Structure formats: C-alpha cells, structure tokens
Image (cartoon, rainbow, N blue to C red):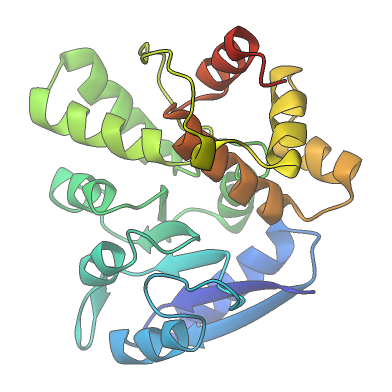
Length: 245
C-alpha cells in the first residue's frame, strides 16, 4: 500500500517543487495529495478520519504545511491536527522566531525552509527514516543558539515540542512506573522496542520486520506514549528495568 502524503502549499511552483523533494526522499510507493488552501486540506483530512485520524481509516503519514495561505495560517491546521497520526513538517520561507517557535508549540515535528537547495531538503526529509527531526540547517542553528543562551520560553517550547516527535527526545529522567494493563505493549511494539534497544535505526527495523518505516514510526510513537518516555534511551532503560524486552 502506498504511503499517503499531503502537501499544503498555495504556490503551484513551490508545490510542484515539494512534490519532487518528497518523491526523491523516500523509496516507498507514495500517494501524494496536493492542497492549495486550508479548506482543501481539511477536506482531504476529513476523508481520512478527520483531525483525530479515526481507526480503520488510512490516514496521511506525512503532512507538509505552509504557513501563509489564502484562507488563513498553517498554524491553525497544526493545532487542529495535534492528535492526528502523521509526521507534520512546516515548509516555509520564514526563519524568524515569531514563526518557528509558535509552529513547534502547535505540534510541528520539523521545520524546513523552501529556499534551501533541493538536495538539502531531500537530505533533511530523509532524516525521518533515521529517527531525526527534519530541520533546515539555519533552523537547527537557531534552536541551538536558543538552547545555549538559555532563552526560558523559547527553549522550553522547542524542547517540549521536539520531545513529542519520534526520536526527538531529551535526556530528562522520567518516573519508572509499571505500565497499566491497558497500556501494555503489543507483541509488534515489543519487537520494535527490542530492536530500538539494540540500536537499530527506523529504516533497519522496517527492513527486519518487513514493514514500512512509517509503520515503525507509528509503533514507536505508541511505545513512547504507553511508557511515558520521550527518547530511545529512556525507552531502552525502562524496558530493561521492567523486563518488557
């Protein structure tokens, strides 16, 4: 089954460019849907279970979101999709703090600048497969500067947001608690966690299990939520302590 991708971009030339970037970034079969405004994007998302991504409906796995749109701001859609089971990445021309940090606070899993070269954008998108946040180099430098300078609001906002994304975690300790019965890992999740603990990348796990890397990504997000952790290291330590793997 093809991996479903939604690209929200009002500029036809930029939209075509992003389609090429996405196709070049992944070896999977892709089904790319294009939307030129918020209304069109919402209509397409409603066809895949709505903002909650209802079970039994094949949702988008990757969503690229422009910020400035004819009928509103991409920030609105990010906020609406906080529970939607997709990797959500902002693609924009804005590299300033007034756009970057609000986007991260609203659930963006990555932030790419459309002005970057084609090869750079492909490389950044491919980081998803390796479990890394797709961030344009200029954005990564900006975040690093804020962390180093100790900007209290912006650093916390970016840190909290990146921790929500698969493998975008921090090293902060979390309480070691036995998961409740209804939160126990499924056999598939336990298998993924075992591979994670051994240091395999998302792409390698997908190959070993014979599934798509987006599916592995979904399993990891579920594992993190069930175990109340935000990084590979925390998951591995907790799994070992609790005998989950």
